[in-house]
Image 1 (cartoon, rainbow, N blue to C red):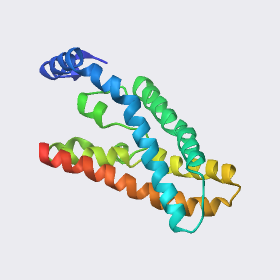
Image 2: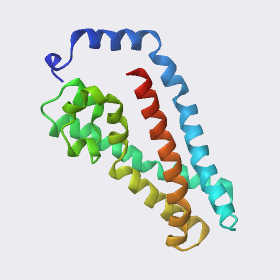
Image 3: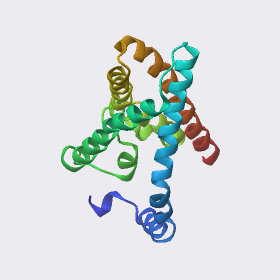
Length: 177
């Protein structure tokens, strides 16, 4: 990326942060992912319990981890898209871009005063929907149930967690703005 697209003070602050405490995020990333996997699996397990069906928590967790491939594909598409498709790049577009998301459908430069909206618009994307469908399919295969049954378990539990996640980031964005 060209240096002129990024303000120098911002780049210096990012560089200084990465030299200082940036390694802490790398250290805790596996723990954060494990918490994410356990929360999603627990939500699906509780939803299945409320539907009077009993599924193994271990198998649900295995399905959640296997379905994570969708987000790895999303990250790969983002890297390819930024590298070869998006030729005009600046820091705002870079930080707010995620392929096939709501931020890609609109011009986000008008959101300067509403920066807290960028994260939810970025997180509402095709890969979230694909994750729910792939997870439902994997659980269908693991438990030998109908696909529609698994969709009825996965979608409500995942959507509730997703709304809490996005709402939490919106709340933090509003507080910090």
